Image (cartoon, rainbow, N blue to C red):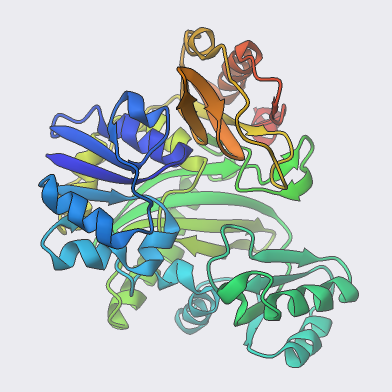
Length: 423
């Protein structure tokens, strides 16, 4: 099969790495890709939101299957565009991607179906939103309804902060994503991620993971797109994963089908493990980043076969195998991230770091310039290690980090602390 992968980050490099091992693969293209992906795929400089050029390229190159990795093109309807010209692709459709495209939609669906989640209300005006926020106690969670590049959630510690956050969103702080705001209660607990595949009728579990959103050690600093992750997550034992399937995933897929929004794609379930049991934080309609990196290094089955079965409605006949080993990834980011940061600093030492047993380095924001590897983004490298235990995976990953010569980069030094503390 000729395959086109859409995206340019660490998640996409992990997917390219897994796809490149498939016996079904003839040739792998990636748009736009990065310096790491270019080592295993033919990269083409077409942006993920340039739908016309992507479809034309797929037709020209006789692409058999498209893997759409990021959220924006899925919510924007890229799956529908490919399918309309007879090119199979990983979904969901635009109608299904509303699970991520509208936080209010999924909250309403949870309320109607009986899926546990935080108390909430949706608003299109600031004054009633502020009044409701005042009734919830502190802290309180303010969310822009639409996509906001992972930044559309503000946890307000005071009433003044809540009012400021609401005004910020309605005044366009998150662009069009803030035309509607969801105000919800703050849930106490530990957050984890669980993934599944849906073909619209059948669902099969993937695996659980736990990421680290704060920029600095000890869960300090601003929220980021994710500074590291590990799998399996001890906070999600097998019994809780089964509960995730029965109480969250299956009812959601059934409810979407009943609403004429058949959901065919990856389901990313964000769970808060509270004293009252698991509750839904959010759904995403694609693999997480950096969770995808630890899932792909643990997956023993063929990824391309699984994605094609998901598209073709054949998941009932699929059984996935997973390594019993643990995987852990450390994100190396440019200093200043998630705020302002510079581009163009050189990175050295990856060959030595990659030589450590069990280590695989995925590129997120990299480029080649005159033969040199340079940083070209905020999150730049995902140093990933596999080992029999999370503690050993952590040691291997940080040994590799120490061999990377990049003065302009930084990382957290405590990825996996919760899991190591439980072992």
